[in-house]
Image 1: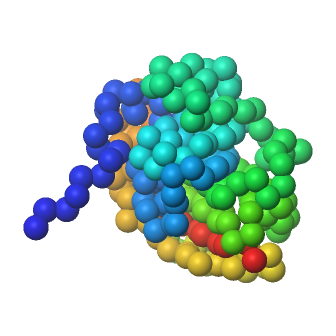
Image 2: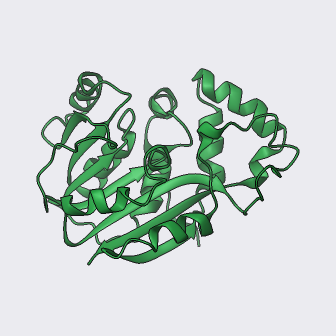
Length: 238
């Protein structure tokens, strides 16, 4: 019996390649939310949405209202992208720095999702506590981040990784992230796992014309990818 084709694979490939900013965020989002109780009409904050392909998937596949927030990509550019797809009444773009004031009402969102961005602002004990007020009771925070598939003692990264690694990767293991999230009493962890879409999401990205993808191709050809995973973290607000 053939497996169902992911919705991501039905999108125009060139559109996705031109809008990726790392491993295919649309593919990762599709897997991330597949096990969540997402329903039409929900309000979802897509925190660190990049060029909005994660937001587009949410709006088109699940018929939810998305607040697409990013620090690096202009909301004007994202608004144009959403309007071109007829989604200007379903996705609302914002400029948001998660480390500063978050400009939304408390208990407003059914879910907060963050794909390939949380590692840049969430590696501290305070971020979950900061985000929880914006989620309704029993609502979800769902995050997917790239990371390492094992723990490495400080200064002992594998020889393949060492020429490429910089602290700005913010790559950690599943156990590292789990220990961090377990410190937050306001959330019940419902899922922590390595995602199955890791290899395909990276393979998609390496085909992108983005100059960072060209740099990453050299890294992956050197064998660094065998140490990578994508970590799914889901918690429900108590």
